[in-house]
Amino acid sequence: QVQLVESGGGLVQDGGSLRLSCAASGRASEMYTMGWFRQAPGKEREFVAGIIWTAGSTDYADSVKGRFTISRDNAKNTVTLQMHSLKPEDTAVYFCAARSVRSSTYNYYGQGTQVTVSS
Image (cartoon, rainbow, N blue to C red):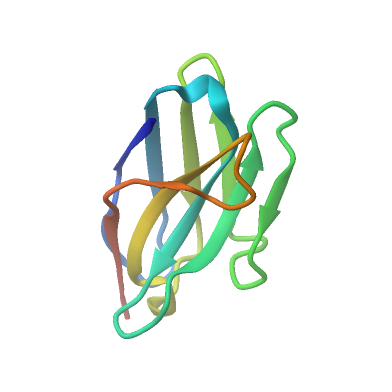
């Protein structure tokens, strides 16, 4: 089992910045990929960004490319999402996620943290 705890959400104005962090515990050594998803009211959860735990390769949704940056600290088992130029449409609950080496999909999620961007 892997436990994920997010922090850093909040309220920010249009064009502002926020930094989300996620701390992983438990069998963190089994992680292959970590990432961030988000879910806005009335919408399905969507992929935001991901990073391969060992190689550090990253992937982003088109909607956040150039504005968001995902990074990880292997020693501390943390992953961070730095968000710049935030827009009202970025408002959502953001979830940290992890995919274990034996899984083909993300199979662990945190409880989520609210990000609200006011216009």
